[in-house]
Image (cartoon, one colour):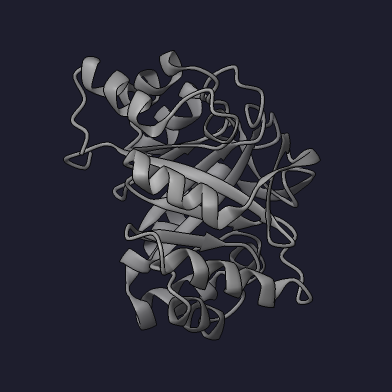
Length: 253
């Protein structure tokens, strides 16, 4: 586990705006990504993650503009995911200010992409984004999904995570599709299962709804906790979460 637990606000971006829904459905506008990122930076966020949830070619230039504008005002690591399909995409995102990239469906379609990115940019720049759903079809009980959880693959969640680490993924962003947007708490069983097979940092995502949800995720094995709507809606601040984690005995920056 890392020395200090990171608190990471996540901005789901579509057409240059932050959106939020439940289980990636019924998306609604949640604000300007640059303004929100700056707010979270001022609150003490350790990192900010952008996920381009529409990730079409037409929308790509908008995303680059948002990344550049954010990087000019936010001086903490910036991870950008959505639509990364090649090392050239990574190079362009880094050129616009991204520190790390999140890869999901493109790596599922072509696993060699992971090693290509890790070889060229280093594992520290590569985050595997895992959208996992409970399933009786796989040995681990978790299946890898794409398209915001709407499409199930044939991949076992833990087996794919282990393969991705071998191919050079430097971090795992583990999002529970079952919990996403529900505010009912992180999937602790999922976090524990991934922690047991991972030698790289694990970021817990999906389900944060109250302060009481964060410390159990860390206790289950998360090196970082990621949330979206509780921050966007002003229900919690990054400082609130850090104070809560500190009170539970976990080191924070």
